Image (cartoon, rainbow, N blue to C red; front, side, top):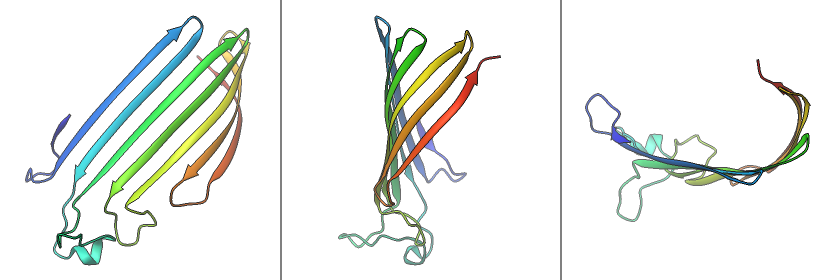
Length: 150
């Protein structure tokens, strides 16, 4: 998908995405990717608004690019499924002056989880996630919950 997103049709964007699922015997492999390029207005005084610039050509960058992805593998062992996942979000381009982000930033998440089937449509889920940030301190999170379908 691509086009303009402002009323004057001056600012462009483009989005590209894909996903795939593959089942090998009882193992599921899933992957997704989405990228978005966005042009933004510099305004009358970009130096007062933007953190990075001007570049070697004397101009401020007027775009940012974001992309995200995930890879997941899931394998059942009877009533227990083991899940591994890697996903990430990256952003490149200029940011507002007061932003804590750099011009090239990212977060990656690594997940290991178990899902235990209690009933046909009810599972007990547990996971550990490690977040790796480019601009902030890394974090670890643990989750425990019950999930079901109505």
